Picture (cartoon, rainbow, N blue to C red):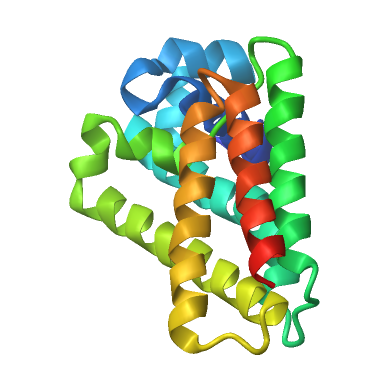
Length: 196
């Protein structure tokens, strides 16, 4: 009979998630995960099979604990007209807070970090990236439709594409120029205010 796990898998996944988010999949070693989590490599491999298995669990955790809660107000049955602006403001605040925190605090987006590395070409990871884009676009579209109830579907689609592009740009800029990332989100908010 195998040994019972003596570690908290939720904490291990969160530690690994933050490492993958900060460094990208290929730049995280088992030793990095051991150091961050305090869990030994044999336990990591026993629980997840491989670093790739741990990465997949970390991405699922990111989508569940980071992305989904941020989109909650945009995914309600009755979306408030200010929900899209609140989302953009909250994202701006998260980017600003991460830049002001210590160097170990991840910034940007784990999914976008993965998309810009070789693992992004993997079919399964590519599917996760596309699902993230679709989930984000759907939520943003709902927020814009609530903000602009009189707008045609094509106008809502147009603003959705522009807003999603601004979000993705801001998430990428967050690592290198958080002030510009914040200004990008401010511009996206202003564009919605001007058009509403």
